[in-house]
Image 1 (cartoon, rainbow over the protein chains, first blue to last red):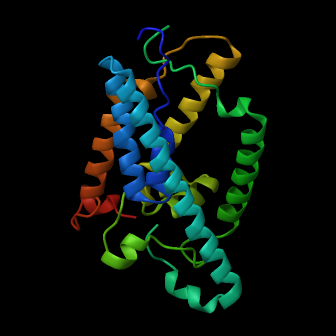
Image 2 (image 1 turned 90 degrees about the vertical axis):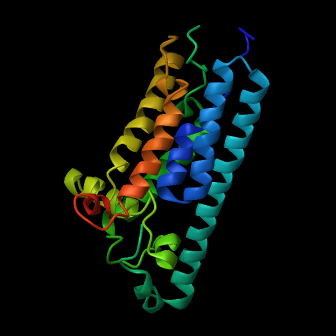
Length: 93
Length: 142
């Protein structure tokens, strides 16, 4: 146990996902990041590793969904022109 | 080795990742510097569009635009968590780079058992407060 390195917790990635994209993915990422740290502190290396892999999965999906939304938007922007996008102006994030 | 040092390599030590991130940051910064998300028809938050609820990330595009124009007051006004989040990102990468290049073992508080819990609680409280439509809470809304 002493020699097992602490797994990456993906907290920073989760925060970025929460702020720039997808709340749900980001929040689950943060919860798993928390689990990585606490399981490791409790001496449960396997649990920490599992939480690390979960955190990676959720943040990765957050980035993929964010990139996909952006891509769809860029395509819409060029295909349909600017007029339709006036609707999106001033909303939300 | 101290407990909170996972000894991860910094992102900048990976040539491929570094190039990718620099290009991405440069493109995004150029876009968000030149265009105001408020008036340029950028994609809004789907949650806000559907429900009217502000999520903890709402306002971050406008915050980023303001930050690139060095208007910290506006940045905080659009999304006050944007600034501490930026600090966490820089801190984490900074510590990792320092430990890696300087061959040091400085503790990284991102790996402190309580730190992610504190982040989670902060985000949830922020989420609730910014949706209360009375002052002073409404100041937290974007």
